[in-house]
Length: 83
Image 1: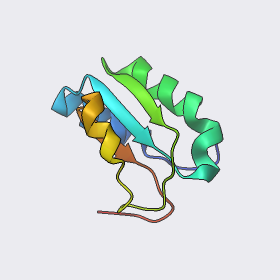
Image 2: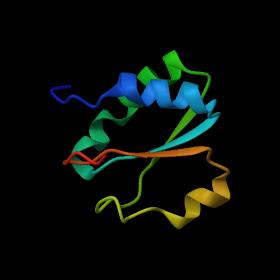
Image 3: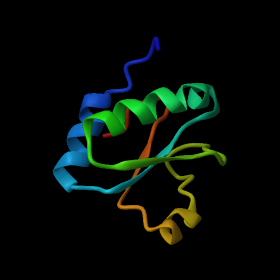
């Protein structure tokens, strides 16, 4: 990958919150990297990672269905910093 996805920061957050089920939401350009991202996170946490395959048009595009899945943490990756 040529991107700095700050996966260590993601791993720290998952571990700090003791999240067991994490949903990753990616823009279309990063979806080809989904399996690599999932493997990296799962190898460094106790979490199961699911990838949201639906649309992702920005931080306001939170999938309402994710709540029914019982997800502990939703992580969105995008093109611009969000703090």
